[in-house]
Image (cartoon, rainbow, N blue to C red; front, side, top):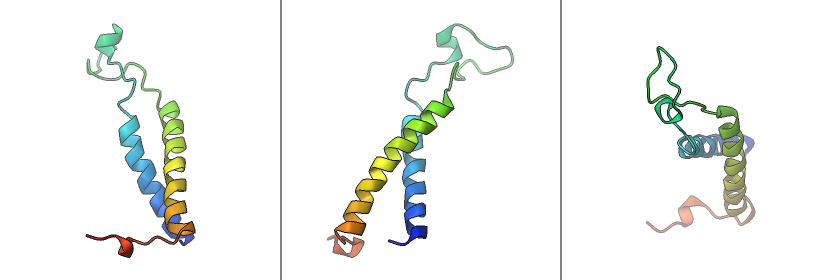
Length: 83
């Protein structure tokens, strides 16, 4: 696996995991009881994006390691799949 391929695969995995992680632990401003004037009532009260990016990076690294082991170490290729 070339470096460019590895970066592309990691980026795709990271992006997909981000959309899985984003909704976890979100409370709307209405649920929190403090709606900021001029914002939507359903907007997150505390999005904590830095924490979600860190969790996303950790999960994506684990998944990428699994993909790298399967494709890089064991030599498995997409052509080996039976469709």
